[in-house]
Each structure stands twice: as structure tokens, then as C-alpha cells.
Length: 392
Ligand SMILES: Cc1cc2nc3c(=O)[nH]c(=O)nc-3n(C[C@H](O)[C@H](O)[C@H](O)COP(=O)(O)OP(=O)(O)OC[C@H]3O[C@@H](n4cnc5c(N)ncnc54)[C@H](O)[C@@H]3O)c2cc1C
Figure (cartoon, rainbow, N blue to C red):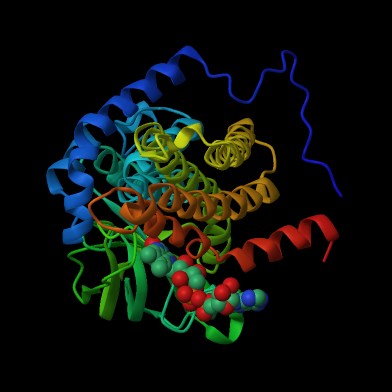
């Protein structure tokens, strides 16, 4: 099997070693998540609505523009910090994790890499302070086969005119800016695809139905409708016909974020299960005294450790500027498998109580399910990995 892309590191350090700034950043986020997100998580899940004040606080804390350079009003942080934020938030609430994930790893990331100077000046200061972003690739008929998309863009005078529908768009309700992919020539296949920057109040653009979901219920997932939507030429992101490259490359990075989300979900569920095992008594002692339960918690902890190492390694590779495509796909694949296993076992450790909504673990299990589906299903990750390790 081909080895991971090796780099020379003069002072090779364990993957779990953080800089002082990273520790401070993580501790602040952890505290915020405990104090501000945890008390709202259950209600947001039940209502299926993301708390507006909480979103406002994400901006105030600088968490919606982590990697945006200072000159555009952002935090000038590294990708690794964005990953820490997604993991820590998801430990408490996976919906909060994905809001921050989409903003940083997909939308800001695409703007930073492919936006021209004028676009960066126009949007990045707002992305860092008040503008929520969404990433619109999927359609009803094109999910895994994303480049079979049908939304059409036609140049008419100084505007492109877009018609079509997008489905499943995260942050659809909250977003003010959408990176949206459309084709100008379906016969050209993926080479016909272009990325556009669409503002919520552009004529002909509407946010449609919001999905009622199994998990990550507070994160909005919406249909987008484009009916003669006029988009100025100046809102083409990157080059015309290069939308496929933007989509592939941003999703490669985004997958590390989903890995982090799943690692956080698994950790959150494990902590509840461990605490419950010390408290719940059967046969005259805490169930955590039984080796059967200890072994389950030990196995879960081992898998979580492996998940985090994969996520941290992929994120560090990204920050180091080396190729991380295989590691990102593997991290997403594995972390979502672990999250599903760990959250399921957490319910079992809670016994019947775990199966009710009075206890927190069933939410973790519901939230874990999406990890195998969005930003490329597990089969799509396996396809990427197979191609890279087998040369297929
Ligand atoms: C909550 C949620 C949020 C989302 N957020 C966004 C978003 O913000 N932006 C966005 O653009 N999209 C988003 N999506 C869409 C998501 O990325 C797609 O659902 C996903 O890519 C799968 O596409 P699909 O649902 O059409 O499934 P399909 O592609 O129809 O797949 C169905 C099944 O077939 C399998 N399959 C398909 N092709 C192959 C193959 N070649 N080999 C083997 N198996 C195959 C898949 O693995 C899967 O098991 C979101 C989805 C959900 C549910």
C-alpha cells in the first residue's frame, strides 16, 4: 500500500501535541460550548431551529472567520483551529459543529482560494462578522454523481441568468451568501460547471422547503430555487468552466471537518456513557464495575483516539501544504463509522433510559448518522481511497 505522503520534520512531535495558542483556543471554545451551547442543544433539536443569538455569538467569538486573514477582519488562524472548533462544538451539539464547519472549511475556504481581490474585499469582512455562508452543489437528481447537475447558467448581457433547483443545502435558512454550482453546457460534462457567488436577495433566488430530519435537526437543510436568477458577471467564483475543480478541492478539505464533527460526536456520547456507568447500579454495584462495560468503554475510547489522530493528521497535512486527499477521505470514512458504533453503544450502556428522549445519548446517535452521507457517502470515500491505494 502506498505510504502517507512523508515529510521531513526536524522535531517530530506527537500528533496530540498542540501549540500554546492552540490549547488556549481549544479551551476557550470548550468553555463556550459548555456554557452557551449545551443548555440550548436539546431545545434546538426538538424545535429543529438554530438559535439566532447563538449564531451571533459564533461571529462575535471570531469562529465564523477562523482562517480569514486579518486584513479582511478575520482571525488569521490555521485550518487546524477550524477543525478543533468543529470537534469541540460537535462534542456538545453536532448542529453547531456543522454550522461552523460549512462556513470555514467550505465557503470561506473557497473564497480565500478562488475569490479575486475585489470579491475578497466585498465578502470576507462580512463572512467574519455577520454573513453566514452555504455551499450549494447537490440537486434532487445529482448527489454522489454531483457533476450531473442540471441547474443552468446562461450569459445574457452583463449578467448570468440561472435556472434550476438545489437540494439539501446546509445553512440554507441562515445564509446570506451561497456558493452555487451551475452548468453552462451540460454536453461538456464536468467541464461545463461554474461556481457563482449568490446573495440571498438576488432577484429570482428563493430558499424553499426546509427538511425535517433524523439528526442534526437544528442545522437547516433547504431547497434553493433559481428562477431567472440574475447574477452579475463579477460574481463568478474562479474561472468559468472550473467549478468542478473548486467543488472537488473544497470538499477534500471539508471532509476533514466532517471527520472532526464525527470525532466530537463520538467523544460527547462516550463521556455521557462513562459517567452513567459510574452512577447506575445493578447487582449492588455501579455497572462500570463490570468488566463487560469497562471493555466496551475501553474499545470505544480506543476507536475515538484513532479517529482523532486521523483527523488531526489530515488537518496538519493540509496546513503543511502536502497532499492530504487520501488521509481526508480515510478520516471521514473511519470517524463516521466510529461515531455510529460509539453512539449506539452509548445508548446500550444507558439501557432502556438511553432509548428515551429524557437522556442525551439518543440525540448523539441520530446526529452520527449523517457522517456517512454528506460531503460524499462512505462508498464515495471508499472509491477515492481505492483509486489512491490501488491505482484504480
Ligand atoms: C443533512 C444533509 C445536509 C447536506 N448538506 C449539503 C450541502 O450543504 N451542500 C450540498 O451540496 N449537498 C448537501 N447534502 C447532500 C449530500 O452531499 C448528498 O446527500 C450526498 O452526496 C449523497 O447524495 P444522494 O443523497 O443523492 O445519494 P445517492 O448519490 O443517490 O446515493 C444513494 C446510495 O447509492 C450509493 N452510490 C451512489 N453511487 C455509487 C457508486 N458509484 N458506487 C457505489 N455506491 C454508490 C451511495 O453511496 C448511497 O449509499 C446534504 C445532505 C444531507 C442529508
